[in-house]
Length: 104
Image 1: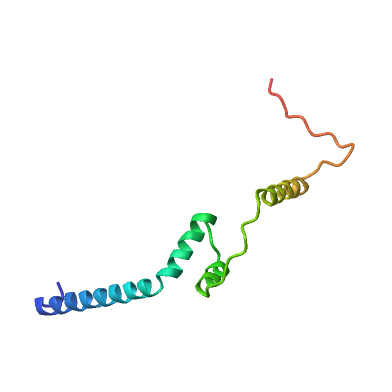
Image 2: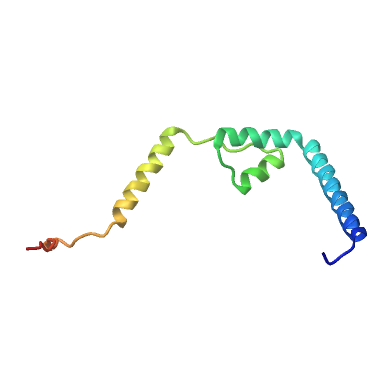
């Protein structure tokens, strides 16, 4: 140990003070903003994820845009599948795919 018991006690007391102050400050922030916290929690239950813009809108007291319907989600999924198919490498017409070499 490179410091005295007195110094260790002072360090412990200062840490306890900092933790206690931080706890009280955090508790006050959450208590003062409980309605916003509840709105964020509800939005997370409904949507599972929120981005920065969503959270900022909720903090400002604004409503979030409606969740897109299942039809919109299905349409987006189909578009993604088509995009993936377009991105797959294509074999030029008339070119035969090579056969694997077979062992004797």
